[in-house]
Length: 358
Image (cartoon, rainbow, N blue to C red; front, side, top):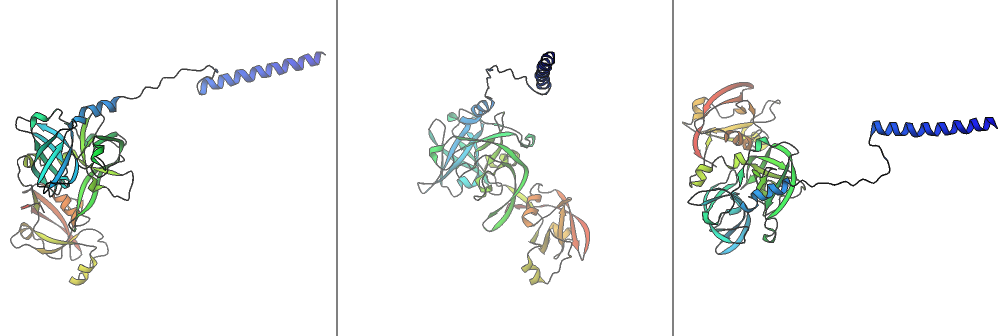
C-alpha cells in the first residue's frame, strides 16, 4: 500500500514538473498561451489615402483629337500654375499627331489644352490650360531618394476612359534601369524606374507617386512589354523635367553629337562588307563608319574604322547606348573617348557639337 502511494505521488510530481516546464518554455520562447481570448485591433495605415488625396485632383485625362475625332487618350498631371496657365506634364506619344488636345478634370469638366512643347527622345510633352480651372498642383519629389521595396502608387486612365482616376499600388522593384526602345526603326535607350504596379494603355503620362504624395516619375506604357506581367516602368521625374524651361516656351530641345556615323560591333553584315576583323576581346562598342569633314570628331583625330569603347570611362554597349551617354552632356562639353585602333587602345578628347536632337 505504501509503495502504491509513493508511486502515485511520483506521478503527480512528474505531471506538475511537466506543466511547470512547459509554462517556463513558453514564457521564455514566445507568448504565454493561457486559453483566454484576446481582442486584437488591427489598424489600417491611412498614409496612402493621405498621399492619394494630395495628388488625385491634379491628375487629368488627356484626349488626342485628329480631324475632329478622338483618336487616343492618356493621362497627365498639373505640376505648375501661374497667372497665365496651368502646366500639365504628359507623354509625347499621348499627344503625337494631334491637331487638337483636350483634358478632362476630376470634376468631369473638359477644357481645351495647348501643346506648348514636346521632346520625342524623352517621351515628354508639356500642355497649357486655363489656370482658373486648376484646383490642385502636384508636388514634385526626388526619385533618387526612392529605395527598392518602397511603396508607390499610380493614378491614371487604364484601358478605358470609364476608368479615369484609377489608382494602382505597388513597390519599386528596380532602380536605374536602362530600357532599350525602338521608334521608326531606330533604337534608343531610356533611364527608367521599374515598378510592379500595373501600367496599361491610358496610364501613359500619369504620375508615379511616393508615400509623401510627391510625384517621382511619369508612367509610360511604351516602356512595358505586353508579354510581361507585373513589370511597369516610369521616367524618373528628373529626366522628365530636365528640359521644362524650353518646353514651356515652345523651344526645340537641342542635343549634342560627335560628328560621325556609326554601326555596332555585332553588325556582322557591315563588318563583312567593309572587310573589318575585330579583335576577339571586343564584345561591345561602336565602329566609326565615317567622320564629318570639319567636325570636332575630325579635329580630335577620330578616324573611320576606330572602335569607340568608352565615353568618360563608361562602357559603350552599342550606338543607342552611346546616344544615351552623350545626351547626359550639354553642347560644348568636352568628353574623353577610349577607342581601339589597330588593336591598341588610346584616348581622345573632343568637344560636343551642336545639333538638333534626332
